[in-house]
Amino acid sequence: MHKTNLTGEQEEYLNISVSRGKYLQTLINDFYDISVLENTDNVPNFIKINLNNILTEIVLSFTEQFEQKNIIPTINYPNAPTYVLADEIMLKRIITNLISNVIRYGTKELKITISNNHFIDVKFQNLISSTTKIDINKLFEKFYTVDISRNQSGSGLGLYIVKLLTEKMNGKVSANFNDNELVISLLLVKY
Image 1 (cartoon, rainbow, N blue to C red):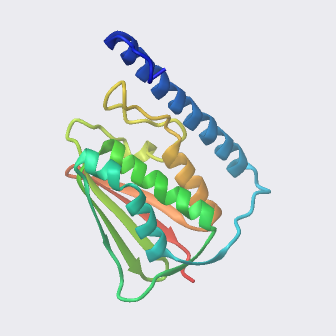
Image 2: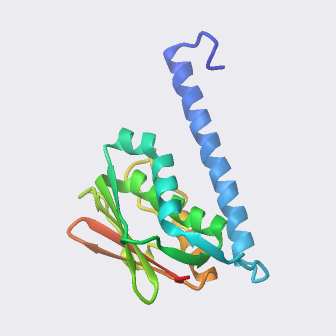
Image 3: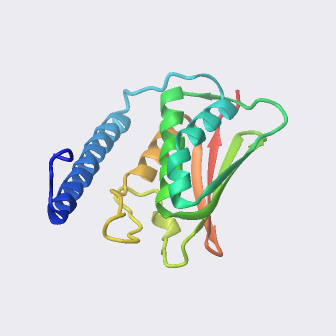
């Protein structure tokens, strides 16, 4: 339909339909993922993963979206490679969901910092618009959303999936909010 001659109004309705279709597809995928994750028989495939490489790969895959939102990502790595014991597919989904939230709600910059302690601590720090209201206590609950506009509201499942995946891999995720800066801390098992 995009290749046919449409009026401005028809083009607008088509864009809305395509956008809603993509949203529904994402919602279906999220519900499927949740049903799989909440099943206790689903066991992660733990392997040694170079976290530095995974983070770089995923951040680079979002280059266009970062440019559109004028967000500058930076990653602070330790001096040596950082290895975690994790399920690669689950880890990629966690990082992708966290970065997607930054693109949806964040502004200006995203700072990712890796600390190598008893656990591997990955902090995702970004400024949030002063008009965005976040309830930190509900951030990782199913269906909690931050509705900054009618067109940008999410399903409220992305961070819930992050929590489920992290816990499946024996890690923890938490958040704090201070002076319009949201910091999500992801604790992963060190290899």
